[in-house]
Image (tube, rainbow, N blue to C red):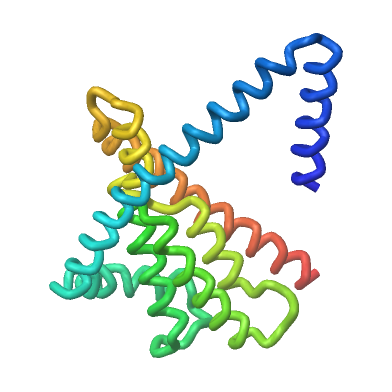
Length: 196
């Protein structure tokens, strides 16, 4: 549906440009945007490779294991129906840790594996409580270092690209808390309705 909306908006814009006589400006904007997208992508690749390297060093040094140990009790409480020794717990912890460092691209494969493992546990075509909770947490994503945003700000010559770190931490703490509270609220509401 979203693809249809975007296609519809693009077609309307092009038709309007044809009738308005500004098709040359549309073409110029298209090529300029394509050029900027490629430049931005190449710039982001170098920053993401750097931070992925830092993540690998942190993993080798045991920092990620320490973070996993710190957050393991919280994860057990958020996902009580997942056995403590199940592989899904490890994937969830890895995903959340990668998201904390703003590495959404690195977190995605681990998130998909976590969902896969939770799907095996539930053995149902309907999303389980754990899957919904994980999706809410992953979407709200507590972020300590917004790597991608810093990279974009650096690419566009920001005077202080890292000045957003403090506000990002505060905003993502609130978004993560809201996600967990809303998840629990709706879970208990639906549970109460099913009990009636």
